[in-house]
Length: 111
Image (cartoon, rainbow, N blue to C red; front, side, top):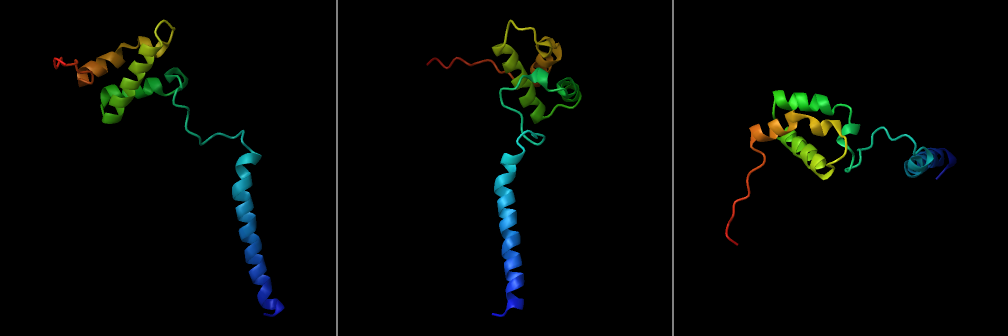
């Protein structure tokens, strides 16, 4: 193989190595930028700025996603009683749950 044919091969190998190195090193170089990460599961509903808007949207146009969100809000508020959490005093959450029939009474099966 002559020198003219080797240069493009070496160039391609170098570029592939550079991309591989960038792929593995980039997460460790700038970990302070967390713009695209998903928030933690135990995140307080009050820390989400659009929660009030979500409740408004769910009340006007109920969906199955809204059902899940409202039940999560209620469960969060139930597990954090005694704390002054503004979203827990919003009566629209319980009204939504009641109107959609999301909480069914437990049926006694006799067992």
